[in-house]
Image 1: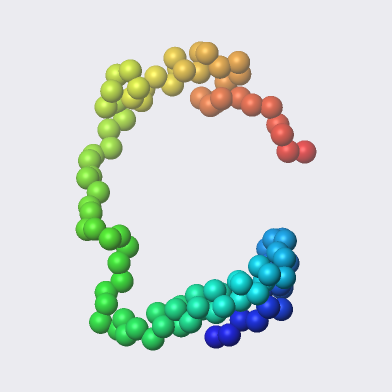
Image 2: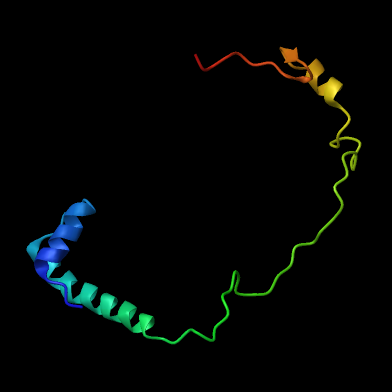
Length: 100
């Protein structure tokens, strides 16, 4: 794909990049080369390639969810936490209404 000076100027304008005429002239063949390379990538046959979600195979370590796993940071301390709150309503933090 061939990119001319006017196309580079339009792209620079859309990106809010100020470029001189010399820079526009220099950038046109560079962008053309990049777009040619991208077109070459589109020609590669990937029909036998399985889609990947990561470069290396990894699995998550699973564990059971336990509410009281740690007595200091675990669950079961709602009343102690809410005792420090300026306002508590129905077992939750009370906050002022922000939507009218």
